[in-house]
Amino acid sequence: MLHRLNRLIFRGIILVLVKLLTRTKVSGLENIPTEGGVLMTANHLSVVDPALVFMSLDRQDATGFVAKKHQSNLFYRTIVNLVDGIWLNRYEADSQALRKARAYLKNGGIFGIAPEGTRSSTGALIPGKIGSAYLADIAQVPVQPVAIYGTEGAVHRLLRLERPRLHISFGELYTLPTIERKDRDAQLQRNTDEIMCRIAAMLPQKYRGVYVDYPRVQELIDSAKSQSEVFHSFP
Image (cartoon, rainbow, N blue to C red; front, side, top):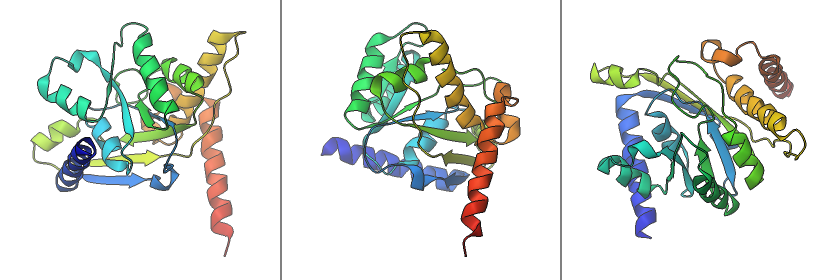
């Protein structure tokens, strides 16, 4: 009970700070399921990205990976432990962290991951790593794309007493094909590309980075437009 209360208080603090210090637009909240395991895959531009995702979720069973390099920071470690974050060694295959994440998803929680593996230094999408596709496969849960933009340089703008415009959008859930033993590496890459293309299709063009010319991205954009037109055609 105390742990749940602390999470609620922490989320409330983030909500207040975001409302006071930024102009943040959140969309797609209706796509977040109220229960069940979900792998949330988000692009990563800034240290404020995880806070935006966390404050948007009206569920108490959400967590994600956090780089072990931050574990020595007492303040950061306290926050991560509060939200049940799983420490990840980004520089090697961290099987222990993956097992914990799989168990969390199997128990019906929301688990967040940045498929790029690190913050983008280009201000746009960089190549995704296969870890997110692997985790989705071993946990057998649906995937939810999350697109974030406007957060790059947000900290510097805040220090200049500006209110940055931030955007976070939650897309529709989808299921990736199961990874078979034959051509396993190729299938993991295929699913990784799908994860990244789903995110890219939700971002403005300048944020799509290395995925800007992927045909699959345009296919997803056209499909979303078509569905929107059909929906709005009803009286």
